[in-house]
Image (cartoon, rainbow, N blue to C red; front, side, top):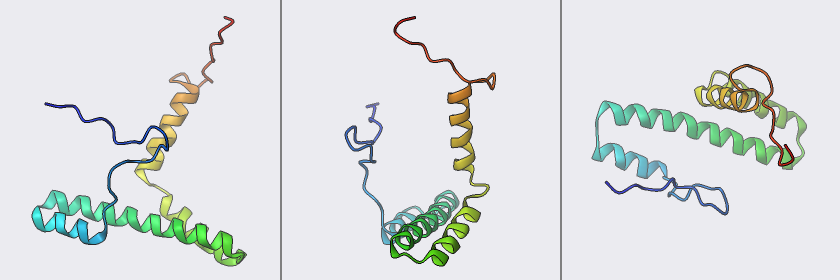
Length: 112
């Protein structure tokens, strides 16, 4: 089996796979109408809503309306609470910074 490289552009750091529209996601379900695909599409829908909320926050910051920005930020923070990927990422960062001992990892320098 041919190994496919991880789809991240080495220069920009962005994913080099196509972004799917809602219509394309629906077409995937119609081509594969099973429970597992439906479950994945509901998760994708939920995460797409987070992207929309983050975009609203980004736009409100530039618009200069402090109250709107705070409201959208608070909504986004509530939606991020309990997100498995956020908890997993924070645990990975903690492990990377502090290691399994919970103490900071010591950086080795060339002079050592």
